[in-house]
Length: 528
Image 1 (cartoon, rainbow, N blue to C red):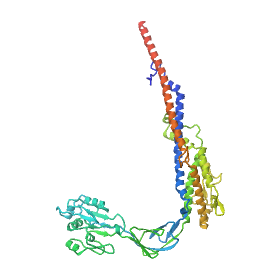
Image 2 (tube, rainbow, N blue to C red; image 1 turned 135 degrees about the vertical axis):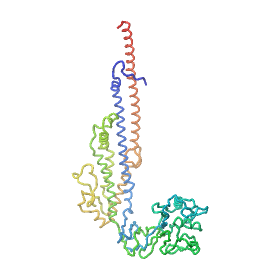
Image 3 (tube, rainbow, N blue to C red; image 1 turned 30 degrees about the vertical axis):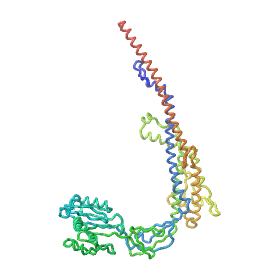
Image 4 (cartoon, helix red, strand yellow; image 1 turned 180 degrees about the horizontal axis):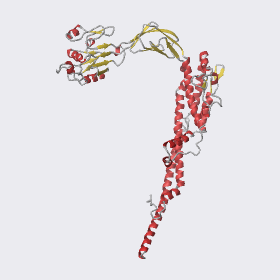
C-alpha cells in the first residue's frame, strides 16, 4: 500500500475527494453486506419457525395419531385431604374403598441439649469430660464413625453425612440432629455403641438411646429393647427408658412404612406413594375414615388434549399469517456503522425491526407451507359411513370480516371459555365427546395422521434443504457463503482503487512540493 499523503501542499481535502471518487465501488460492497445481513435475519427467523413446527410435529401431533393418547382415565376421591389419586389408561372403571392406616416416616433422632458453651469446634473430650487416648469410635449401621477425644463436633457431623444420613449441629439450640435420607423402615438408621467407650461418646454427643445397644431386640413397633448387659453398663448414667422412646437425653422417632387398605386388602410402601392396578395413590393423612375412589373415562382430559393441539397449531399459523401479511418496508435497508452512529439505540432497534417484520411479506415458500397445513386441517375425514370436518365439532375459523389478515387461519372452538370470540356458542365438541367419544377420537386420530404426513412430506431432505426443515437451509447457507466471498472481493477492489487515487494525489503533492522549493530558491536569488 502506498504512503497516503494528505493535501499539505495543494490545500485539497484529499480524503473527501477520494471518498467521492470510490463511492460507486464502496456502494457495491455495502449492497452485498446489507443483503447478507438481511439473509442472516431471515435464516434466524426460519430457524425459530422451524423449531415450533418440529416441536408440534414430534410432540403433540405425533402422539395424537395413536389411540392410547385418548385413553384417559380420571379418579376422584371423596376426601382429598386423606389421599390423592391419578389413573393411567389401564385403570379399571368403578368405585373402590380406601383407608390410610399410617403414613411413611423418616427415622429421626433429636439429640439432647448440650452445654451452653458447646460449639461445632468443641471436641468429643470436652463433651465427655475426659481427654485420654482411647478409641471412641461408634457405628452408623455398618459404617464406622472414627473418633477420639480430639475429634471435633463438626468432624463427627461430616462423617455422619458421608456415611449416608442427614446430620447437623444447631448452634442456637445446642443439639445434634440426625435423620434418615428416605422414609420407610428399611431406610432407617441406627447409631450403635460397641463398647463402653462408644457409649461414652454417644452419651457426650447427646445421642445415646436404647437402640444403641448392638444386642438390642427390635420390637414390632420399630422401637428397641436394650439387653441386660447394656442396661448394666449404663448403671449410674442419667439415662432412663420409657414407652414413648424418650431417654433422659435424646428423642427418637423410628422410620416406618406407609400402610393402606384398598378394597379390604392391605398394601405397604416405604413411601407414601402406591402404584396399584393402574392407580397411583398418594397417602396424605392417616385416618379411620374410609374414602371412595371413583374411576371413569376422562372426557375433559380428551377435550384438553384436543385444545392443546389446536393451540399449538394456531400459534404457528398465526405467526405464518402475520409474517406473510406484514407491512412493506420499502426504502428500509440494514444500517451501516456510520448510519447507526448518527441514530439513538431505540431508533436503530425500530429501524431494524421494521425490516425484520417485513422479511416474509408475500414470501412464496412460507405461503406454500402454510397453505399445506391449512389444507390438511380443512380436509374431510372418513369416520364410519360419514365424512366429517372440523366444523362438525364446532371448530372453525372466523368469518373474513371478523378478523384481520394475521388471524385469518386461526381455529376457534365453539363454547371455549378461554376464547372471547366463541365462548358464548354451544360447545359441540364437549357434547359429542359425551355422546359418541369414539367418533371424536377416530376423527382427530386420523386428522392428526393426515397433518403429520403432510409435514413429513414437506420436510423431506433434498439438495436445497435438510430433513425436517421447512425452508431451504442448505441453499441459504450457500448464499451466505457467496456473499462473504463477494464482500471480500469488493473490499479488495475498493482498497486497490483507493490506493490508486492516493498514489496519484501523492505524486501531485510531491510535484507541488518540488515546485514550491524551486520557487523559493528563485525568489531567494532575486532577493524577493
